[in-house]
Amino acid sequence: QRDVNVAGAITGAMRTALLRGAALLVAALAGGGVAVGIGAAVWNGGGTTTIVREVQADAAPAPASFGNTGNGETIQQLYRNAAPAVVQVLSTQIVSDNPLFGPQEARALGSGFVIDKAGHIVTNYHVVQGAKDVHVSFSGKDQIPAKVVGVDPSTDIAVLEIDAQSRALTTLPLGNSDRVQVGDSVVAIGNPLGLDRTITAGIVSALQREITSPNGFAIDHVIQTDAAINHGNSGGPLLNTRGEVIGVNSQIATGGNDPNAGNIGIGFAVPINTVKDVVSQILLTGKVEHSFLGISMQDVDRTLTDNFRMPADHGVLIVSVRPGSPAAKAGLHGGHTRVVVNGQSYMLGGDVVTKVDGRPVTSADEIRSAVQAKKPGDTITLEIHRDKTVKTLTITLGRQPSVAAG
Image: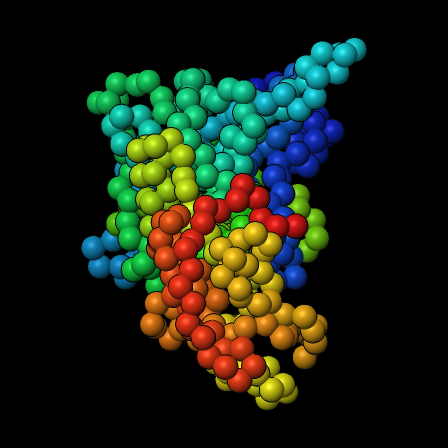
């Protein structure tokens, strides 16, 4: 049994309210379930605030996979080295200003981790979204004011800064998410449901997942893990066996339609290579700019080519074009005829992209990656097939809007 300190008495109603408020919905369907942000316990201000915190966390015994990792560390070593760099993030926002009862506050509790001796901390955007003040805690008792340096809703990443002595800070090394493989052993450290510095172990279950960001855009190359993460783990690190951060835990799939449900073994982490780019822009300019093309897409596969006459037998089908976007200005065409094949819906009639900057493409993810690798104002060249004609278009990319099209 782990020794748990309860600040105040917890009634059944309070516990239910805490758990129900925990999920910050990020509107993304995953499989048959709902993908939700895992920014911890959210509760309305006023009245008694009750927080359950873990005082002592014993590292779990290493699963078999951790015994065969060569130069990797055990779970006990990972926890001992990394836990001091993991923080609780508590944000407070005004959710309403009732003329009778006055301002009503809500608080969100998530996780974060220190990345440098200057006191910069990475967390999720949805943990600090709309916050009027933010504090971080290293011990579960201290409350250190934190400044929001910058946020990026499109990748659900935020950077905080605290005023602390550099020698007192433990930092986490950042790994290379491009080297991550399915089956790799991983651990997650965070504050699920307010429990300080909890560590859970698992593996990388899948790669190249896609989740939806708080502002509706897709986050690509996401890491899926079965390491248990729950509400409150948001913003915490996903570590490899060398203690390097390979992702930022951001969402879970509930396996049903209840966004308040807990872990079922399907969690998602924003890859650290994406985070590195976002953080570097925030630290340099205080903001993040993403290039933007303005199309929605579907892969051209055998399901389509076996049943319909397509402009090309491979490539990526343009489903729709956002009005006023660079794609619209370049004259790209979206689909106009909806069909359903084997339960899958497709929008046919649009252009089919077969090459990007001279390189063949077979998936929408390849096109998104090509766009994301560029800056606003850069050009991208697309080879498209329309009816029986082939065209090459050079398009100047724009800046991504604040929200995706509805």
